[in-house]
Image (cartoon, rainbow, N blue to C red):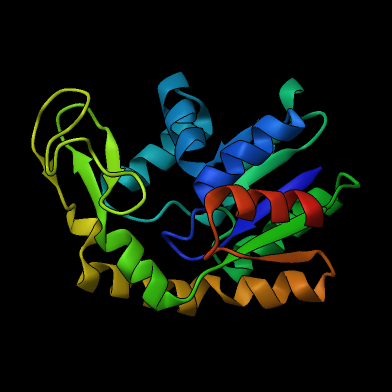
Length: 212
């Protein structure tokens, strides 16, 4: 089962991708992990990617697709995989479709976790992070035992710049411009599965299993 995760930043696609991977015994593949692995291993593509990243530039699609195709040829992808964070744009989706088609493969399902913008702004504004140990909390859904203090190491919790309402709004507008058209792309391909992401996480996961 070859799955692409879709949804706005903060919709919970990373969390659900991990659960899908565990449920179906397939790897959860994020582009960030692939970049780090290739750079660490010093592969040709990793060196190319690092050169762009060091300049603060975006890694070109053909380099990213090259790394992704290498990754999905590994033995643990035999039964399928969950792609999280890629594709982000129509050209990336088209490149992926073409690369898979050349091997007689295709994406089986694009799972869209649908959450309205106002819910996302509220949800992300409630996140708190411990900069010391990396633990994350939410003031409503996963509150620390003591307000503003990390349960794990006792350090102060902060609202990261990424999660501030004005930053979230900017990220959402980029998402609507670049990534939301993927919903139409995969709908046209006949593989879009949409679930209501405003529900409890367990209910969202049950809905995902039902559509898969």
